[in-house]
Amino acid sequence: MTLRSKSLEIAQSQIGVQEIPKNSNAGPAVEKYLKSVGLGKGYAWCMAFVYWSVKEASLQLNVANPLAKTAGVLSMFNEMVKLRVTTPQPGDFFIMDFGHGAGHTGFVEKILPNGKLQTIEGNTNDEGSREGYEVARRYDRKISQMKGFIRF
Image (tube, rainbow, N blue to C red; front, side, top):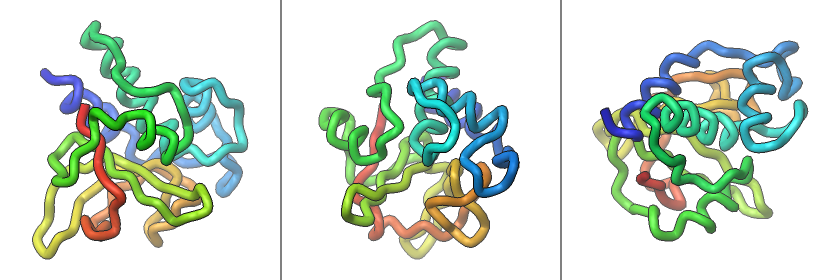
């Protein structure tokens, strides 16, 4: 099994995990994700969720984690220049840039018709917020909205 496929499998196992209480950026699972990048509760955690998933997969497969240890979406994009790609594949993670340092990320699970992606994201919700309260599967992210993708 590859690191990408194992990371995606681990991310899938977290679907439905929610902040406790909602909209707090806290709770046992969320704090576990944040701790993996050296942060305590209360921070946005979409990138920490991706990092934690890859870290867990790397430990299970006994391989090095290739990602920078950061909770910053745009920091990760800037650090992973050699891993950037423009055409997504399952297991990659996407990078969205909303300007002023704000971003969002999650795993690409499937490429859908009409330029859309099926994704697994932390710190989102069914409405698509980048400051949501759960790990969820989304079906409406557009490839054209992405700054890029990281393939590891």
